[in-house]
Length: 238
Image (cartoon, rainbow, N blue to C red; front, side, top):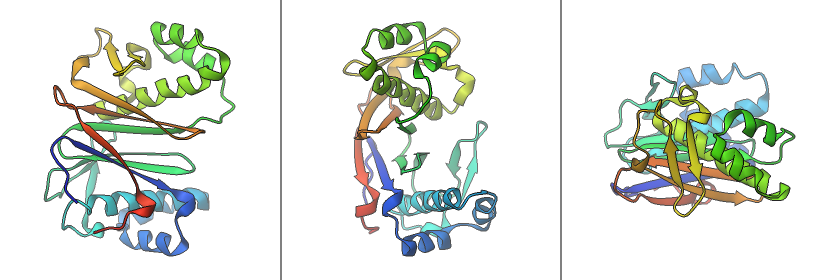
């Protein structure tokens, strides 16, 4: 599969559609280190999700290279972000998952982050927003009616997670030190403590199901990224 310089491909997999045969195939692709880590999960459902995640990453990357899925090697950066160490072609990726979905974002060179969240939770999102969102985000969120607040909260939350992951800095950025305006296009504002250029970033929101929200962040500078979403359950590996 061809990946152009300005492409960002999002591969989304529904865990509930993975057969036992597929699961067994994914397990055969895992490295010894991955298998050892997988066994540390206490519950079978977590072992299953981890196995599918590892399989999704490996089979997705092999769509863009002749390297076999089981041959990919990885390490972690300073903030725990996974990186490829043996890719024969330029590739970068990022992952996110819920109990139902796993998403793998792939692009040739740009910093990329993706986050998917299940919105049907018992958390008090208003209190979370008060503690972790910027003043402008809190003001904009609380101006909405209660029905809109929940979905909009997760729009903000997934965007923040995607940006933190793409930046490589994670939670060290501080959730309140940057702010999103949910216009068209979505825009980012940064406090002076963050040494970054907001104009270099591009964002996109998705609503894959009524109870899920997803966001992708791409540091592509002046280039508009071509972001495409694929169903990994229904796409065969070439």
